[in-house]
Length: 249
Image (cartoon, rainbow, N blue to C red):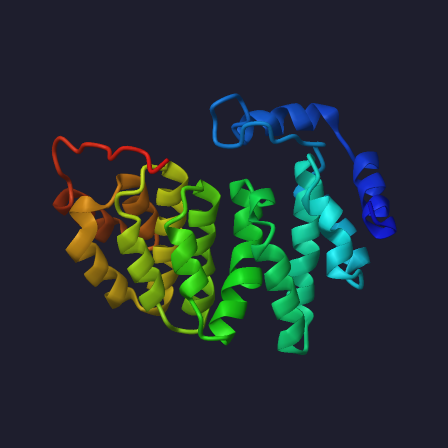
């Protein structure tokens, strides 16, 4: 482990809260057969991870890789928090490219929903938006990995922030038959964000696909609508005898 990674690891170990770690393990579904099987936690609260990360923003990105490969969730998170801050502060696209390449070549270590959600739009989406190249996301969208599919849809947030919701809508349509609840939630979340930019565009999507959307996806997508509109949409899109598709993997 590099010197900088060792220092961060030691600091996180010192902040460990075993009792909190037990609670977090239950929250993140780490039992055998669950989505985060074998993940492990120190019990360091997220604000403390973020506060620690602020002191290491000058670190060379590659020197933090031992943290991303760690068994400890908070060490992986700290690496990603630092990388996101470095990407946002970078003055030159070459720096963002370096971070993107590190990120995309170590996807197996970005293996829980919170790790995806804090990193994908900045480290993956923003760079690909700047280079006008969503093709890597389209490839991730077809992955057998739940986390890679989630990275694909959450990365479209970069396009949403630029005022373009078309990629989000295209990916959302591709994910209508996805079997994973965590994909339904992420897709609904991105549709909700897209609605802040183009509500009529999202409404048109819902009118076309609402009866085929998993209910969790739909409920997330319409959270910002007024109660009367939400109720009308849920009633209109209700279908009997919905059969869940088989898992992709």
